[in-house]
Length: 43
Image (cartoon, rainbow, N blue to C red):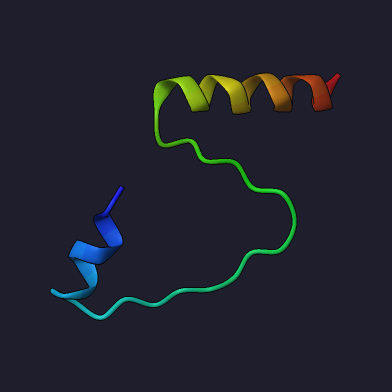
């Protein structure tokens, strides 16, 4: 979305870079997908 564009105009925002794989879990659907990935890894 545009949350960061909205937020940085109102308050200081700090960022940092993540290296490697990351998963967006901002919706129930993507959370389920991440859960499936981690369940496979945990086997």
